[in-house]
Image (cartoon, helix red, strand yellow):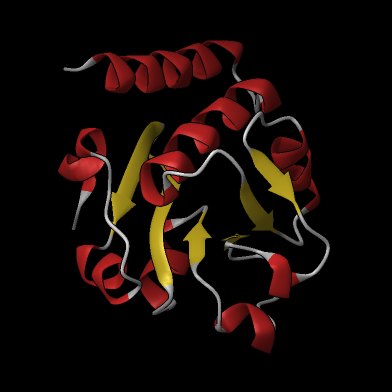
Length: 141
């Protein structure tokens, strides 16, 4: 297991120990995940979920934008409203159902039976002309 993967799972484990949603840890995880896709130091993210807005604001490399048109990616949860403009953007889901049901969802980070899950769609990444950093290839579906 390489250093980045150990770091991510260490952070996830630490978050579980805290037994709650830890914004600082979540910010670091999303930093690593989105950098693994875009390979840019600044990634513009749109979300209409207040919890995830806090996560993005606490991030080092992710910048929250107010207009979906300015975003590189939309961070989406199943309880949120998916507007027409959001449907035309790349989506990163916070639950498996949103990942499965949205053809623009390139990946997801969510909890399943108390365990963290990361999944990326190789086909959707390829359609978007994106590729993953090597440390995330094992999460390709």
